[in-house]
Image (tube, rainbow, N blue to C red; front, side, top):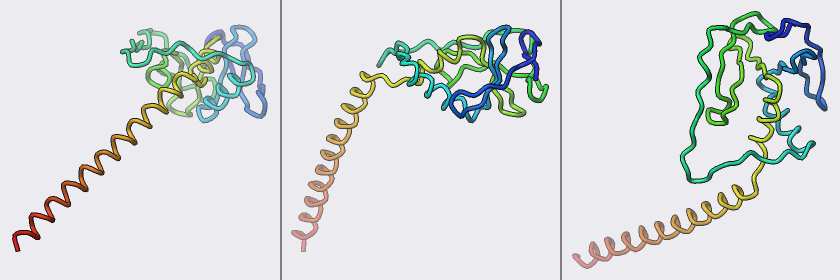
Length: 160
């Protein structure tokens, strides 16, 4: 396999038990799409990577992949790869092969993905509060339905 950026040979490596191919020249790496998230999450935990800054309840600007006439070729199958915004709103632009579902990461993009996947304690607390409030409002909704049902039944019974 050759690097789609500098055309040098890729070296097979493993992070823990997860395989990937690395370019010693440009620092890019080739990963199977099914392993990418697991690799990023494990790296975030092992290297104590801090989460990226997230803005809660504020609109995010989602970056579009740059329009580039050059198409990188997949190191595994030779098909043209498409640039995508990972997870639609991470703003980490990666190259993906639709034919074999491999992912090319330029130098530093795995760290950005690790930050994206890192758990933010503030987000966990906000999520718990939202669930708690949702459960409380669902209980109130159920109580309102029960009261409505009882009043309809009472009207129906009193008619007879």
